[in-house]
Amino acid sequence: RDNTTLTALNLEGNRMGDDGAKAIAEALRVNTTLTTLHLLRNDIGVDGAKAIAEALRDNTTLTALNLEGNRMGDDGAKA
Image 1 (spheres, rainbow, N blue to C red):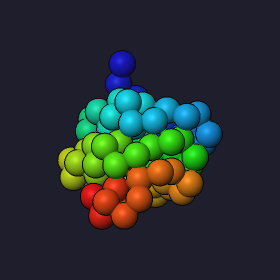
Image 2 (tube, rainbow, N blue to C red):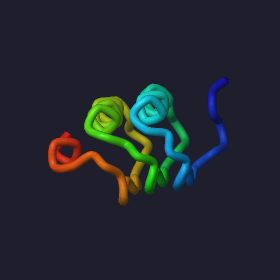
Image 3 (cartoon, rainbow, N blue to C red):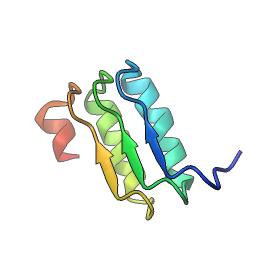
């Protein structure tokens, strides 16, 4: 289903890892309402960070993204 009302989502501490981050990335590609997303402490690594970064190239709505406390390192941060 398409999201038509949710503007903020906090998924802090869910241990979603790269697979979960990739699923979030797919949703971000078609998102038209979410403006704030908190993904703190979710064990997201380089692959998950790269998927999110790629999705954000298509997303024009998200204005705040918190990835604090993940394990993406410098390579993920550069994505």
